[in-house]
Length: 204
Image (cartoon, rainbow, N blue to C red; front, side, top):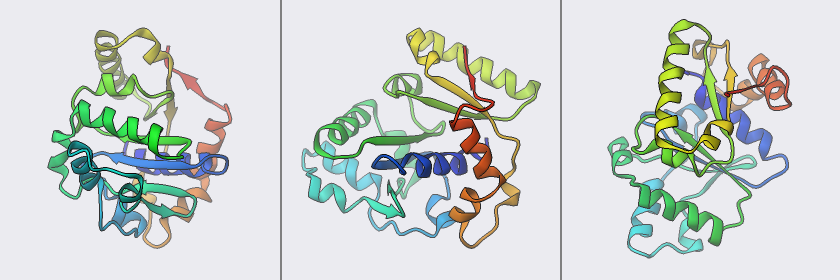
């Protein structure tokens, strides 16, 4: 869904009201930094390189972590092609480091289709949100994705998935303070209602 990034950012903001949240973008050409006018001198590539060389420590890790109000974030790979090299071993090393060496209470992983073994990566997530559009075409896409998950993972992974129908378009996003636009708009209210259980649909 074209509104996946806006959805995830509103989700992160809402969770950050009660928890210390880290957002990690794992999509290609997300436009994340430009959209929200954010700095990003260091990025996920710097963290992965240090993890591979066993040289990542909390103080060096924090150099690659930035803040957007209450939400902390790691800038995505500056070279999107590096996403293909972000192996399952790198992924598990990152999750292990976050759990053992940081005080983040929630980690939001924003997945696209640029990583391999996606189903296995999702198996480490406690909740999986699927922003969707309605219609036969999108139902066909979802069904194919669910077939893939059923072949590659245990059944409980599907039980953690929640479908969120988003009847919105990115063409309505303007320049300026996009974060405020998203939070205090019809879109932000719609996401809040879903997260409170209104019109919320689990994928069974």
